[in-house]
Image 1 (spheres, helix red, strand yellow):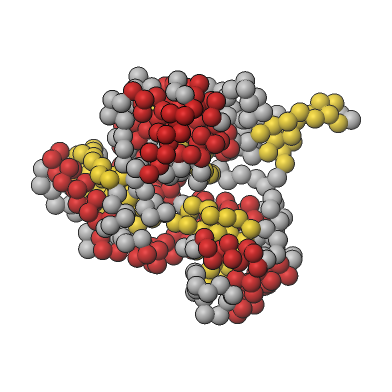
Image 2 (tube, one colour):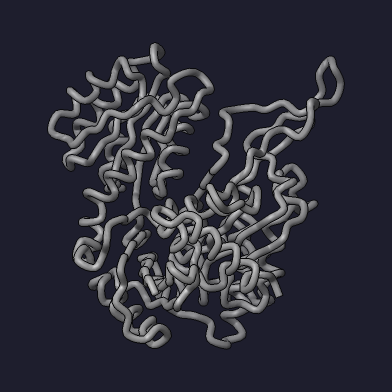
Length: 463
């Protein structure tokens, strides 16, 4: 036996997965409440005790971890044009596993700097201008950021001609110059910036999140949990040398604080009568809805869906929904445990979290007329032909109404312009292993892929 331990420090729960590399199988899984307010290691130790009840005393040969606890990797980006360099910076940040606090466009103001100071991000990504293009905006913004009292790590990934001058203005900050996220108009180059973000998370942010005290337990890699999930989903879709993937897919992770959506798909226009508008979307795309979550961000779901829709789905009166939402947001560790009201509310919340998040993630299409006749304009990804949806998150794993909840990820006549999947095979990550498999794939991609395929086939089919 060759046991490996995989840890996911979540905002609400710490999840542990034990894997036997030799047998390519899961030895056990457990979860415990993430004790972020006191010492995150307390929750880890509780999770280890629960895991040992399944596996027996085990000495792990390797241990890897990811984390979204204590707010996860919190970032702010500043760019030039909202639909171009600012959007490219946002894509780079989200793909690296960050939670976006704000995205600024054009020249920063004193009010913007005050907002950034109050937001207190972990990292700032400064971009703007194509190579050989506009320099004034990114240089102005570097001067403005230099006035921040706290010396945040700042990644400069804009016009390469201006990068050195920006770094000089930010003397005293820990600055990193990376390749331009948009070196030419309409051309994305986000990977170098993403690599730098992840490197910073490893070297600096982990200490700030209280995870450094687990260093003696870990073999090596720590990454943001969303980055681990994205890595797992891309592996599941594409496959790797020696093992085929399952093809294009969407994954939705409904958490306590956020709802993340991942699409591993081209999403190109379906025919010659459809024209694409805006920046090209990455094949492996992640979006995160920071206002949509089952506990910490419960009020965001109610606000996005509307009070009437939550009442309709849950069967509860508006006043009771408000009471329960207040209670759950203040006590995020509460689970329904057979409470009919809480189960009804959680069903409504999870349904609307998925519907809202997938609709925001997917592209849109609109009909227009030209001298050539009727045509269509597409923005974002066309996901209508994607036939696989992977769902994860405690609210989806433990409910008996998963199929009903999952249906809200699909196309609806009530929102006909949304390019969501028309029909899909729904699979549930019932043992909460997706992030763990992303971690495992950094060293054992074939094994991670085979375990995911087996788990989603045997345990993940909707019942």
